Length: 261
Image (cartoon, rainbow, N blue to C red; front, side, top):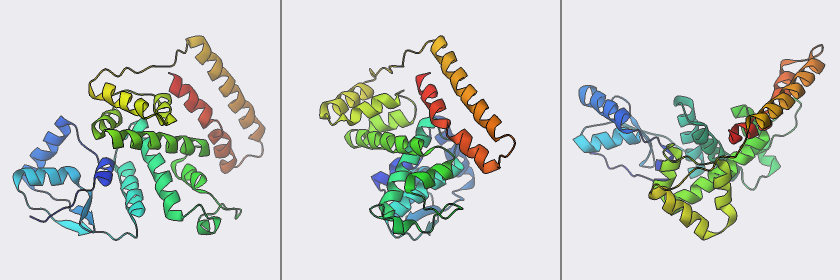
């Protein structure tokens, strides 16, 4: 059997199926074989982790296909795009992937040099930075991408301390707020250690923001009124891009409410 290298950083980006989904995939493979090739980069597995596990378990043959990339960051971006395009991700998983994409894209561009962004321009010719480019790609606000980058930092730090704790959070087994993850990035080692310990022993409790219905009603009314007035102002002369821009400007406010529920 071909020797496959498992890279732990890449492994965390590849989906780990729950028990039932893994059993269903295993039953299908035992009946029909491994039909899709495993994808490698320099002998490192970058797609097909579950199929590889089943192949090893039952000593099954499989085929591979090699892809060429210039750097690890290019591989990370490819894996992220591949996972987002094919899977139904939870909101947390999607924010995590967007944050990782942001960091990998910035590293691949090199010191945020504007001259390296010439291939990504607005229609009016102005340059897009990494956050703006990804905001347009994922149809979210620039601020959302920046927040996602911090969330990804927190989850990476958690994973470095405990892969098990990180997997528990990303899988949804452990519920955690963005505020709790951000608090972990204060620089205190004991904050990370305490969180890891409580997640691993199952005592971690999610602390939700205490938001009553009156507060939410007020916030919804305020935002809906702002959106209505802005769209009414565009009603006579609007273009589709102007409407998208107006709506996008309120996404961050809606996400803030979402985090409080």
